Length: 233
Image 1 (cartoon, rainbow, N blue to C red):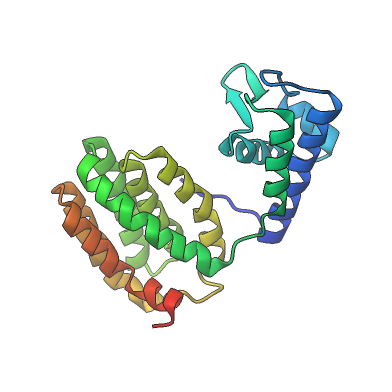
Image 2 (spheres, helix red, strand yellow):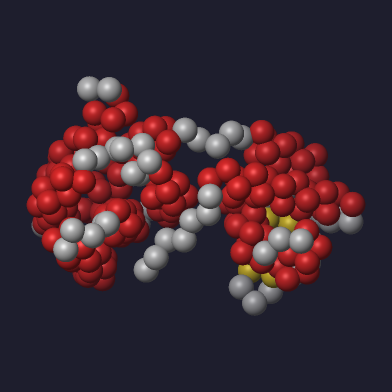
């Protein structure tokens, strides 16, 4: 599994542009709750952007509860009034691209919760997915290859095992941005990767034993360098 990412500024600016165009389309056509939006292909041609760009903008509006996508049926305006919708979209458009340090701090706070829940709720299938990600990370580190994506995929597997869809969604939102900028901001020394294998194993073992206290402590120990980065320790 690969996580594809776009250039930060280009993606953020284009997404806001498409969201504004979707808002204008809804207003011009007087679409009401339950009304269907044109297909992604039609919107991509109309806005002169790729279908994947349109899809990302729709997913963001769906995340905020403004649109609702139904498989095999299309995308519909959610059950919210026009005035409220326009106000919420304006708030979304005013959002600034988050600072990298803020993303890392958010990740720490989220994962200390998700790892505890994962230890309580994980299934055998969850453990298998974590083990696959852990092995992929270990192999790359031992071969002295870049393992940032494999590292984060292991953490995403933990988030999924938490059983909390909202937390999992937040992790999916911030992870691509972290991948893009991890080395740029020199968050962790590459020489620490070997030790991280053992740290990951301790986290995995605690989750497997369904030990929420041990899992949280293992994750906290694993985030030692991130704490130093975020809080200038």
